[in-house]
Image (cartoon, rainbow, N blue to C red; front, side):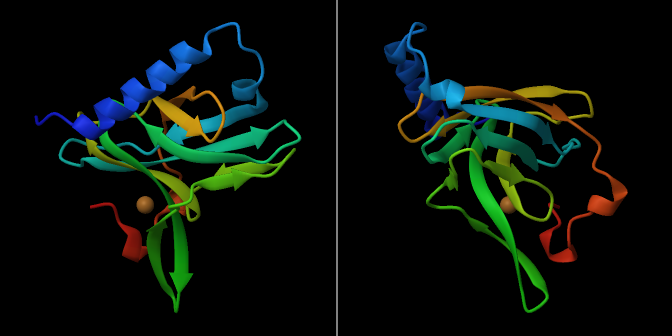
Length: 163
Ligand SMILES: [Cu+2]
């Protein structure tokens, strides 16, 4: 397997940021709560998958989710699904995603999702994977994503098959 310098650099930066912030610093990271974090399975031979979660901003300020990363994937991109003229496609949320004060941002099938590419190993139902989520002006947060079987009615639109 090749090494993935981008991911490593990112993870290192996040770690350094966390160390600089120190454990005693109250506040910033605690203003976003994460629930319902899950990933689709990735059978052997499939090196990409998508992830979903709900973020709630409990602060009085908007918070921008900027990026996500894990050492187990070459890249993690924030994506959204858009349907134009009956054709589903994905585009990068290049500016991240703003969570309004007191509001939520939902990543769910058919909408926003995290795109994991270059997985280092297959993911089966029940596996857990930690992703580091970074926010503008906040300490990065680690969330545990559980691999769940996707519900039959959540099938991806034909144009968005992952393989
Ligand atoms: Cu995508």
